[in-house]
Length: 372
Image (cartoon, rainbow, N blue to C red; front, side):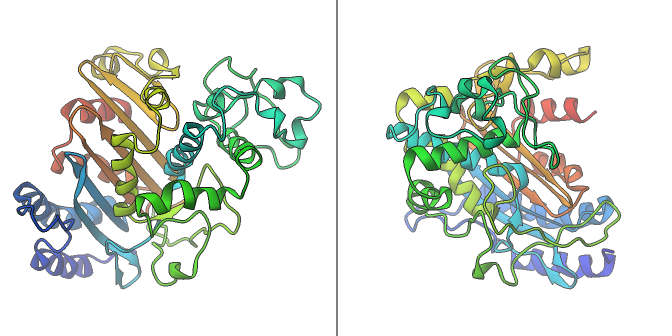
């Protein structure tokens, strides 16, 4: 269980550190006064909020004007070990935007294709006898229209639940399928493609799909809703859909690349920021939700797209046992944030953090309407 007295001590240490968690600006740039002020507010408020909501830890990165301006961490990586901005978190389904980015960069180099039938290079053995497998494309998989379940049944194997391309259906299996196609089409393991296509070019040195020696002593321990510690889940074999480990700074660095459409052709970048599979009608039922909803929302390629009047945003969340995560980007302002937690209660800290980061009122209003 979390100890109030330990949190109080941690709060004092963090507050005394002042701007230690601010992202280092280039030498020629002045100090970011707004980021310093935000950090001071976070230092004051977050430790108490974590205790109140029963959240073991939260780690944050803020993006403003297209660059990372602030990182901060609160709570405990494990009992008696404070979380720091170097603590590694399982980001759960925030893995999907990373994997999609790798595939979109490869598509921009014509090494994979968005609308090519994937069966020409890969068919899952479980679907070999189903002609619908010949309809599957990368676009369908990345926008959750593959017709596949979220995860296959361990006994019955992989089966379609809908016809490919017919409707939205959130599917981790779709991302796994797309990754296998990518390996066959582009040549090489997906993890190697991730390094060469995204991680190394972006300078992401603290992100990995599977366990690494540098994970030792740095992994945030997940916690259930009662505060009970759980065993961290670190994959030995990659998943394109789940359980990447990273830091908020590394993930925010990836997000700044997304804002700039780095590595993408203009045509593919346009597709990434566009709603491919709308679910506004389903998500915005009722007067309260409809009032806060954007003009359109649904899956793009890797991200949920929120098309507000005059602003287009990308967002994604992640939820594994003992973990909750969220990231968002506002294309119109160049702002965004990534929030990583190590608790089943982690969603309870999202709105308090976003409010203190002065996130878009439209975005906060949308999230509040969905959480009610």
